[in-house]
Image (cartoon, rainbow, N blue to C red; front, side):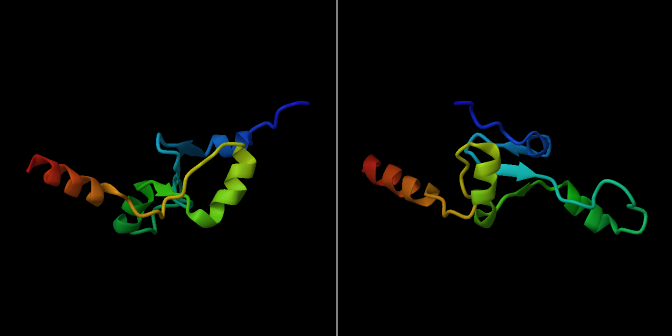
Length: 87
């Protein structure tokens, strides 16, 4: 049975980070910028990350396991365990 192919058009528009998040750039930032303010044009440079509502569709198009971006991080709990082990 043949393998499922990844959506080539989507792969040209996104990057998958090491942690599995899907990064992309905002629309409307490439041309017709003369009437847009500098603040708006600078905001187009900031990379965006896909939210959890898009993950089901992205997984089916990519055939990969991708992670959500709106999960709380566990960085704070790692710091407290390091300080308690020193005593």
